[in-house]
Length: 107
Image (tube, rainbow, N blue to C red; front, side, top):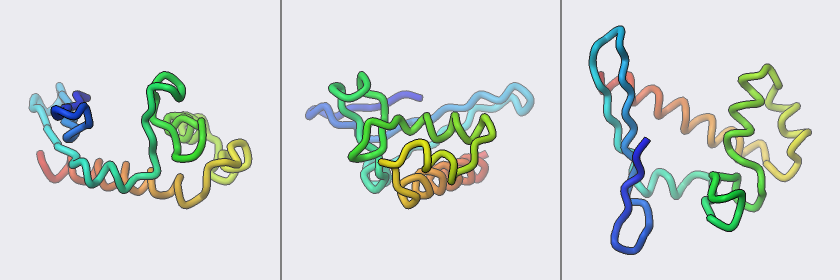
């Protein structure tokens, strides 16, 4: 994933590349700044070395995905990380789902 930056240092969008050997094709998707700004995610070099975290917390967004991948339910995740709201977690998951759907459309 390559992040593009404007003159002010803010991200102008993300370009996501996915190389699939079985299809022998590259897929590109640009995620606009306005889409990213609607997410409950903050990126601050002073917080967890700039890892994306849920707004108002020090909980990395990757923790949600890692916990779900390991079999933890959403409710268990929320119990373990009470500073993350259900709405924040669902918004990130919906964004991930929509982004994957867009990747499929761009093939």
